[in-house]
Image (tube, rainbow, N blue to C red; front, side):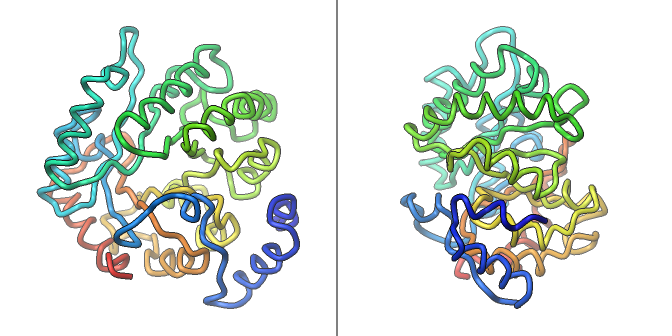
Length: 298
């Protein structure tokens, strides 16, 4: 990894701390920028579930599942639709806010799943979807929008031309996100160096990395070093293990916790299982395991 890439924003001080965090267990980073500037309060770690993993895709009933399972909240999906997507409707946004308030659970982030059908790197409609997602996130009460790059048409891996298009589009939309106080989180198959190259060229803290531990592990990346390297540029996490339920697969969540401690991360970790739902029993098991590693009072 090329640690020198961070010097444009971090100057020499953070670069030294990055090196220290790699070489010395327990060495720390500054708190993430969004955590410094937000009004985040309450537990350090919040555990949520993606609504598609809970079998309630784009459905406020996912909040009820989260409540039953003792989770802190959910991540809703904003899907592609030829007609007006439900989440664009103020009445649906109000429904999410009302249910969240009544059930006392939160909405940790919004996933712009529509970009699976309108790829950001190639579809002229994509920028409008991203702009709309910024407003929807505000409408449902969250400050994080996950921007996915999956599927053959959307993948950025080994596609420099497509990556250049994405960088330009992020540059164009970043001022709107900044003004709204929203962070756009890139989730992709890219490694930490490739993510940082994009962030450096975009040049806005409104564009960060949405780090999926399972996806990066599947690609063969050292996720614990990557977390420490990306540091404050990680806005949130997906907890996923392709090899089994949490604690029974190949992701070392206690080591991931140590890496998060090193970068000073506090915020949301959402349980996610690709495109297939888990049973409530499975979500509940994963939630209990994560809570044992990431307690509220950490």
